[in-house]
Amino acid sequence: MRRTATVESASFSTVGQDLGDPAEGYAYAYCVGIEDLAALERYMYDPVHLEGDFGILPHLARLSAVRLSDDMDPELGGKIMRMHLKKVATYPEWGRLLDAIPDASIPTEA
Image 1: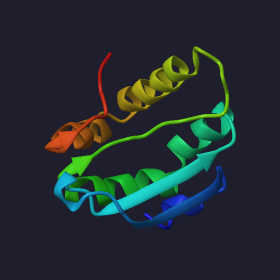
Image 2: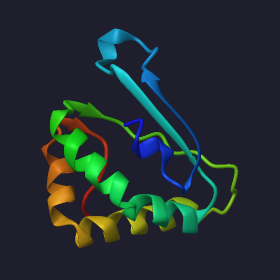
Image 3: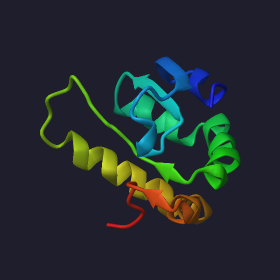
Image 4: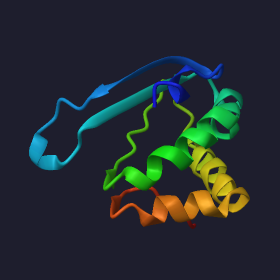
């Protein structure tokens, strides 16, 4: 996770322990700041990120994505979701890895 967090397109990042309620089942926290949609696309397709996902996702029992932005574009969430679904279509095995996580809130189809 630390290697993925250091790719060129990440403006800042932190990787460490989740400080929430242990009963929620999360052990790790991963937060990456991305400057804009162009940087997000580079981040999503960065070979280091792809390799990291294929190494990390099979070990997860639970995954939740929190997305927030200082960009007030009301269409931003939809733009990001379309980018995500395009990546699922480009890398179907990656989508299957997301689907295999028993408790995940990441959609893999529209």
